Image (cartoon, rainbow, N blue to C red; front, side):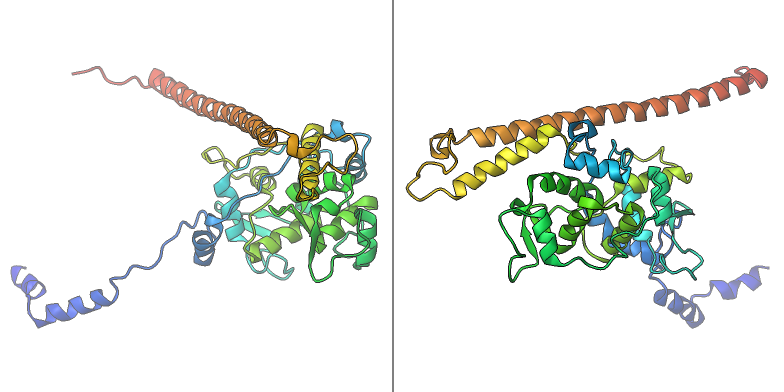
Length: 366
């Protein structure tokens, strides 16, 4: 036996030949967590793209503030009471993994994973119908995605004031051109339907959507599904975090170990709308003022040049502080709930251990 081992221990030329292949394969293959990502490509998308993207949170609409107004009528017509309610807690990693796992054949009926997304070791349904079911909406009418485009002139006439045509040479118009009631609707659209952080300008797509919502119902399932697909293929902020987290929970994904939550922002209510309109009016007055600091063109208004220059900044600061306080309170409540669940889990484990030891007591110490 010792003699048979000597050749394998010899440090001669044959040993050097055996070492050569190890040098060529010394670079280990890329590994990824296959319980989180369907393929290595999905992991690379997460690593290089979605992990660095910001997330636009959903906003609650305080329906009672707009019960007899334009926004309230739009919500009632579309049966969006659940859709605009307080959004559920959303988790950052769940959202970013979801977008990374969206595959190229999501909308291909012939693909085995048609309208399914891989999440935490299983496939969950993600389709217009799944979205409608999540929000409890029954909407099968022809929607904006299937309808022919409305004439842009008609769109401008119906949603704008002060202009009679789309600005020449540009693909956007100023938010201030919208009718007051349409501006209120636009706040909800920018957060919940066509999420964007560029709210000061209105794209043609958003203008068509606002015009559509004035008189028609929107198939929110089709529209959100289409938007998620576009977000996946572009470098836009990630959106619909509460919906994605809610669908994962609905189809059995364990969220008990998730920690990092998507930050919530202020709800859409009458106070916030009024503050926004006043802020926009003050800015408009100052921008139209002559170089000599003349009187405001609006009767009864104090000359902005004579106002306290810190008043506007202070007002905005107070509004921001209130929003931060609200966010901190919500975070504390969520943290307390997370700790409570941890405590309950530990209590159950302790109860099981005590039950085990009552049947099988440990041996006495030696």
